[in-house]
Image (tube, rainbow, N blue to C red; front, side):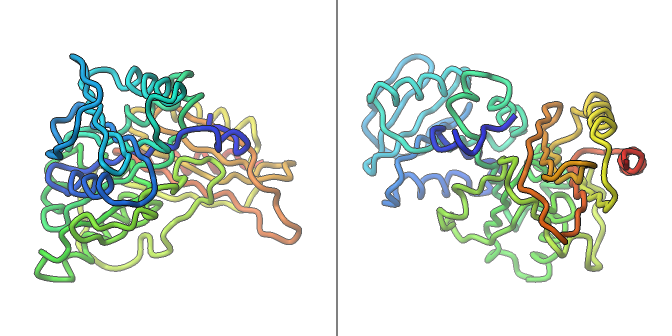
Length: 332
């Protein structure tokens, strides 16, 4: 369950930065770590090597090293347990030994970001100190089509994204190829906003404080989703949107979603929705990662406002018809 808005200000926001090998994650991170943006950021390189930045090492042991950059940011190389290093960073911050405002976790190019995201829901100590803000995925526009064809990890990284940063678009000789990639990514994940960036020069506001994992954030879907005629890719990661103006029966929807999560949780990468529940004056907001699902009341429905349930499911080889028929059955 997500933290309430009341306590969010006390939590340390976390961004997960992912993307396939060579997409430009480290270029982007180097810029974040050296730019004078006024933010003190702790960067965790999860099971990763050196960043290639020469800095004074403040703390070093057999498990990880913590490096302070000249702009006050902190960089950690973690080869052990992510929960442990997050706990240690929070303790050092509490004791005044380290100063940082937020955390960015860079995963390896071959990593599935799902288990990293789950860390912030499964571990109570971490859940009580950190707020998972968003998953940001970097996609290499020049090589992305083949990478997505060949590698399940790359497709999962797109499926988990709250924001997609397209790099190397200037190296693609045909703008139509970039447009085709944009549409393919939108088919896989319609809820992730896409931005073109050059050599890691993304506006830091495009990366931080997105609140993609905030249950009360607005459910935003690209209006161009599923429009346009282009080559269809046989991706195993796909998405679909379900809408229904009828009110839903709370007990039925809870039972059905729990059943779907039990059976297809491993293949459900991200799912999120706004529910119109019978007899409820407020929206019910829900979302999940794999088998972890949570819900919270949203803002009240306004007089005369059209009440509608909208849900998006992103996953691998999901039985869309089964989901749609089951959700329709939950109408009150």
